[in-house]
Length: 318
Image 1: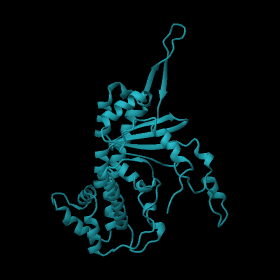
Image 2: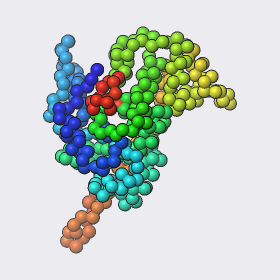
Image 3: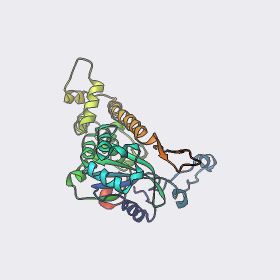
Image 4: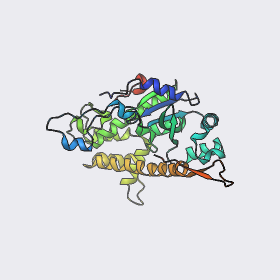
């Protein structure tokens, strides 16, 4: 099931990309500014007649939609250094502390992403996040926080990607892990609508304890550890494999997996949001032209606000 990207979006996105340093291992766009949304508004939902199909949003409704980007870079310090020279005004007050401090905040707080929100570029409002290639690969393989890895399980538009074999392999593994996890959380019988949209169309999975144990053993390491933490009584300190075998025989296996996922996603989302406030919501005071012998300060408030798509340039729902 493919989603329709906006016409000529590839050209527009690459034009925007030209405003940034070229050293990117991966760049992708996502969200409603990239793909047409099918479905009625809240008003339309009330007025739709029985059998009436929802209308596709017009292209004009996307003209003012913010475009969301993620840039993956091998050397964040060097990339931020170049970007500061090209786009100094994109950054919050942290720019005065230099690229090393920005990279420290990026890597060590939240989900490993540094966002610059509400930026005007080529007449479009954009937001872009920067993440280290090594940190992204770790998240794709192990689901350390499922922030960008989770986004890459949803429809995205790949704009640029280099020949990093490890990154491509990790992207593939992330999608396979998403499929396995979704199967574990579904009942024995399910419709296509029951599946997450990114894994629509997949066939029936083995729901026997033996089959579930095999699937549990292929999950990312961090998710396995969180499941062990959920199931392990205090002081027991059981081996992860022992816990997963128990979970495989548990009628509520899917709920246990869901709780393990929640233990990963909730803290990372909260930390990333907190970092967003720290880096983007602060008031930035800029000295304006003096008026009548007085120094006037202007306040500028900046608010913060996932087939294999990287092989085709367009996103598909798994």
